[in-house]
Amino acid sequence: MKLHEYQSKELLERYGVAVPRGTVATDGPSAHQAAEQFGGKVVVKAQVLMGGRGKAGGVKLFDSADEAGKFAGELIGKRLVSIQNPTGLVVEKVLVGELIDIAEEYYLSVLLDRAEQRLVVMVSQEGGMDIEEVAATHPAAIVRLYVDPAWGLADFEVRDAVAKANIPAKAQRQMVSMIKALVKTYIESDADLVEINPVAWTSDEKLIAADAKVSIDDNALFRHPEYQATKDDAAEDPIEAEASRRDIAYVRLGGDIGIIGNGAGLVMCSMDEVKAAGGNPANFLDVGGGAQAERVQQCVELVLMDENVRGLLINIFGGITRGDEVAKGILEAFGKIDVKIPVVARIEGTASDEAIRMLEGTQIVGAVTMQEAAAKIVALAQSSTG
Ligand code: GDP
Ligand code: MN
Image 1 (tube, rainbow, N blue to C red):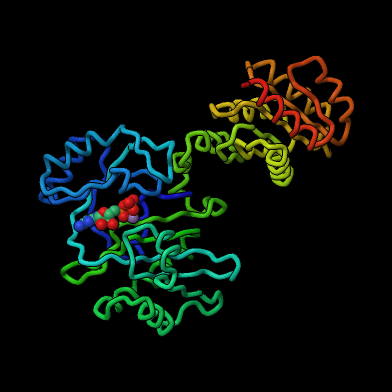
Image 2 (cartoon, rainbow, N blue to C red):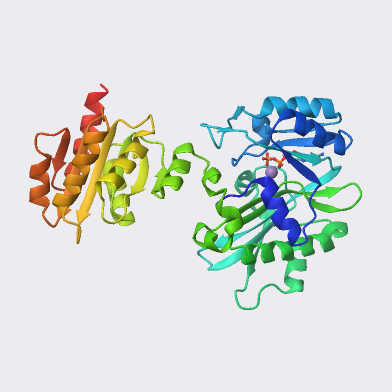
């Protein structure tokens, strides 16, 4: 679960990271009031969970509270669109932050390196810009420091990495402290990402987190009840947010063939088969065990919220769950919702013959193998849209 910038800053501050003073506002007048607190010298920042927010016009500096309040009022309720998020997100809150006088910008993050099976700290002198771009154009500018899971980080290692990253001598001591605080935040908060970009070096020689991005491992959210309440808002995509509310494992992928299956592995196979048949998966959706009518209905509704979907593939392997029960669930679900696009269902396993017979004469086209089902749905989707 991604935390908003203001939540990330609150968390980091508790671990001793310096952050600019700031107030969250949900309308123009309260943003104006917040800006007055800081003498009008503020930065107004849209609190949306998407990359490229600054370039999308979601971050602006001011030296008057009137201007800042006016901008905030216009920004709230507006949809911000960036290269990283073409669908965009509606701004609901802004952070009104005290303006800091930035002399230099660095980069800092902690994440898990799965191949190394360790946490890795990434430090760079080149902050403020897209780190992927730095990685692509001059990878040597990013220094990686691996955290030993048993011993943690020794001070000398951190100092060494900071020096290697060409962080100026005057900023090194504060950078070392910030790195140690970040690693502690990461571990104790069950994070899967902590990133500060930019780490600001101010004209009065202070190292401050000008931006902050923390993501908490979803599987550890039960240990962090303070974030659970805002979990559903954390999805970048409105359909993913709805899926989270319905407790359905759904990921939007951008194609036009909707997919519903039981078991993550089977769903991924279905995605591969759709791709192999010349189609593009619109989503990943694991219906979970049982596949009761109501559950199936909820899943179908969810997949169809994506307006790009032109065909639906249902791929169920009946193990303990009988195929005919699944077919009954599907038929009940489709009796309640008006589905206008072609649907192909492949039901394999226990009582599958029965299941396929039950689907005969309905709007749902049966298929015996996954390959056959994928080929059918791709062809039907193409012919139904010309
Ligand atoms: P992002 O585009 O979503 O990553 O937004 P950031 O919070 O990183 O802000 C983008 C840029 O705005 C930063 O790289 C800074 O250059 C600038 N910025 C943000 N906050 C301040 C501030 O308090 N003072 C100054 N001078 N610049 C700021
Ligand atoms: Mn940033």
